[in-house]
Amino acid sequence: MNRFLVISAVIICFFAIFVGDVCANNSERGRKHAQELADGNFEAVYNDFSTRLKEKLPLEKVREVWEAVTKNLGRYKGIVRDEVSAKNGLELVSVILEFEKNGLKSSFVYAEDGEIESWIIGFSPLEQSLTVSDKFEEVRIFIGEHKLAGVMTLPKAVKNPPVAILISGSGPNDMDETIGASANKPFRDIAHGLAVNGIASIRYNKLTFQFPGKFKENATVQSEYLNDARAAIKFARDSKSVNGKKIFLLGHSQGGMVLPYLVSVNPEVTGIILLASPAEGLEMVGWRQRQSAINAMEDKSQEEKDELLAKSAEIRDEIKNLKSGDEPSVILGVPSGYWISLNEIDVKTFAEKLRLPVLVLMADCDFQVSSDVYFEMWKDTLKNDKKAEFKLYKNLNHLFMPSDTGKKKFVGLENLKEYDAEAHVDKGVIDDISNWINKF
Image 1 (cartoon, rainbow, N blue to C red):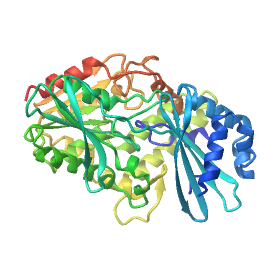
Image 2: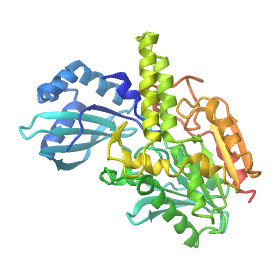
Image 3: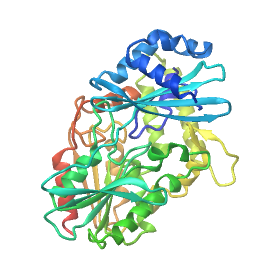
Image 4: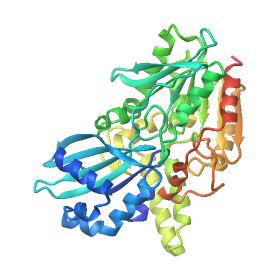
């Protein structure tokens, strides 16, 4: 696969491996192929590949990809379910397989003759039960017009506690921001830690996780993020279980990036917490990531790198210059209308107007949203907000979990393997968030 195409995607906090073209029914065949992969019978699946896919994906590569993705998943337990859809004469069958530590989605795109035109594989968090604790209780809730599944975590020792609404980063995240082979759950860690410290929380599935078909050509940041976030705020304000006058928004990565705009139209919010969030648009984050990845290429001459860097800058500028009324297009795999919606809520413009408590937390081993760039950028952007506080953590990554590789540059999808090891959000970070919220 062309490496530049891989690193061109804006990768904030989501991991999947894509092979071939994606489109979209044959439930029985999909289950059979998925089971053959789980059994290690790669040749049986490969033999049903189309000629075009065989050229792109040799048999040994099929084995290599499968073994790399399942390496840390533990014992295979069986098929959970399949999901079927169809479009333009092609059938997409996605099969969810359960492993000891996480779920896996193996999707096959079938042509009319039954050949596999594409294979897509990625982690797929399985529905978890509510946590039972003597410190807190958890209640299932539903957010917004799409009834997104969520959980309200309530401390048992505090009546009418403040509440933090957790807003996840880019990609189709579940309510826990489950990531990696070990199914690490940073939002569950934070929710439980806050509850132990007397603070309630609300977390919920993103629309693109619960209803992946909703993200279409006319998708916007409003339809992906903001409508549901505003519904969560209303839910908290109307709830009799929490203090509706002490609502805090905690956004991770892109989820924090949208908060300055969100509070401008929801002034009842008490304060916001930005976890590893960029202080500028996603087109700039992606550009910086691509710069790092291109400069790290050892198989390219400087002239070839310069050519790729120039192309990357062109993509950045193309996105920045998009405006309403332009002919629809797709850039970096994202509909232009989505980029336009992001341009219309420029982070810096809204952040500079903030005059409410803001807590900015960043990690020095974050290779996705670099603290070298954004920690000082946030300080400058919020210099007129006397209620803004900033803290930088050593030896933690983008998830505020321990980094086992230390500070490094972003060089592509291989970086994200760091998230495969079982880990938890640093307790000191959760305590800092809790102490800050409890000041108000």
